[in-house]
Image (cartoon, chains in turn yellow, green):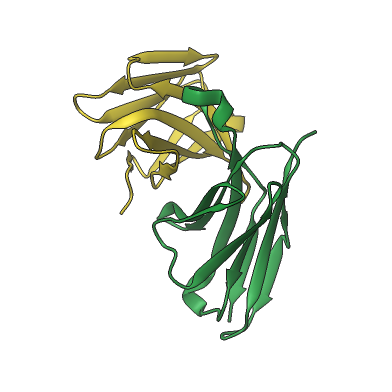
Length: 111
Length: 115
C-alpha cells in the first residue's frame, strides 16, 4: 500500500495566492522528500527534510514536518502559472534506501 | 549533462507479447529503480537495484522481471503483457554516497499501452 497519502488530490488557485499541500505517512522515516511532475514527464526533486528537522525553506517553497503526527506540508508562496504541476511526497524509511511515493496533489495555478 | 535515458518513449503492444523497457544512465549512480504511474495511484515501486549484483522486489513486482546488465543499465521486462500493465513507466537513479540527502533522478518515462 502507499506510504504517503496526500491532501488535497487537486487544488486550483489564482496566481499570487499561496498553495498548501499535505502529506501523511504511516511508518517511521529517515527523511521525506517532495517532487514535482509536469504533465506526463519525469519527476524532479524539490526539497528534502530529515526526520530531525521541523522546517526547511528553498526559494518560494516551505516544507514542515511533524513526526509525532506523521505528516508534512508543502507551501508554495506567491504562486505562478508555471507552478502548475503535480506534487508528490516520498518517504525513505529507516531500514531503507527505497523511496515510497504518495498519490500526489494536482495543482493548477490560473493566471 | 549526466542523464537518465529511457527507451522507447512510447510503445503499443498486444496482450501476451514480451516487451522490454530499457534504462541507461550517465550519472555514475549505483542505485536504480523502476516505478509505474497510474492515474490517481501515484508512483508504485516495481523493482530496485542497489548495485550490479543486487535486485529487490518492490510493491508490485508480479508480472515483471528486471536485469541489471551493468552499473549504467537496468531493464524492465514484461514476459507476457496484459492490459492492466498499461501505464507510464519511470526509471530513476540515486547516489548512496550522498547519505541522508539521497534523492532520485528520473528519466522522461515510457508510456506503454497493452491492447
